[in-house]
Image (spheres, rainbow, N blue to C red):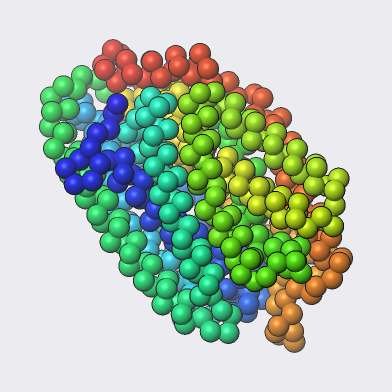
Length: 488
């Protein structure tokens, strides 16, 4: 096992703790940033779409950019051969997390306090928050591939992430109870307190992880095998890495599937309150809607603990395939039953989000396997974990921005009603009607069916599984022991 307990906090608990502090803020962001700018700050549709377009471009660029800045020395073979590069990489990632985490929590507050013209603040807040969220996510995810190689060890780390992320869902319940369009002050105080807790939490977790690796790095450096070095310029290394991506078949297949998954996850997050309000609002109370909303963030993390145990037994590839099949089957059944069975509709809305989010939370295991394959296939001197995670996000994360834009357009096309607040209608963002409810139902079900079918089709071409996957892991283990001499 490639990670052990530190004297302060066990490494796997500290790693899971980082997931807790990320989810505490990001859950509130996903749930309220669109609603706040639409109904409180009253952003117009033109400014909204321009801001989302700017966000789309930056959101796509910053993942590979930050990944390259983190791991380009490995591609250029500038790492010190006398040191254990894995330990050096882990320490570097922990240092970045300790510095960036408090800034991430500060940027979270930009969404809840009006201090600039709304059209400027929307773009600035989105880009700044996403920049530091990307840095935090990228290095936290990369540590999964750096801390452990064996599937069971990665499953353990991921299980702690799910456990702590489930605890992080408490911010959804609290924020929903405090958010009021006409009185945002209690919600703002809550967000400030939350940001302070997260800043302190990052400091404690990173200090614990760093303490362990500082005490063990000297021993690992003495045991490390030297590797040959062939220095390259940044341009040459980038050109070579880009060419290698085109030859990395499994990475390209995964990126297409992941794009669809990211889109569907954020579509569900952005429009879940709208679907609850318009499809179930006449049957359940406001408190019931709040409970469903909170459970939709909590249950996926708990359910993921079960999915991870299934992954140990059947493999990640098979479990993800089954989840796609379940998603399509449930959507087809709901399409056949229609909107009239409100109790079944309630179960579908919840299960759709639970299975979609459950799939999202397994994908880091797949990317970690792709890191192993990249390391072995191209004979790296060290795994380029952050760069692989960042490049995967570059090809798939635009789905996060497309979800609210395409979703609002599809709802307008189906219902004829705009989701943007009109100055002449301050309290009528959504008009209750059967046509609007039917339009919401159609969009929700068809997005699930189309995304699921396309993902099943693409996933058939993914070959990093079973015996081949085990061979890749064995090869990485031996390469890290120094049984290679001509590293490219």
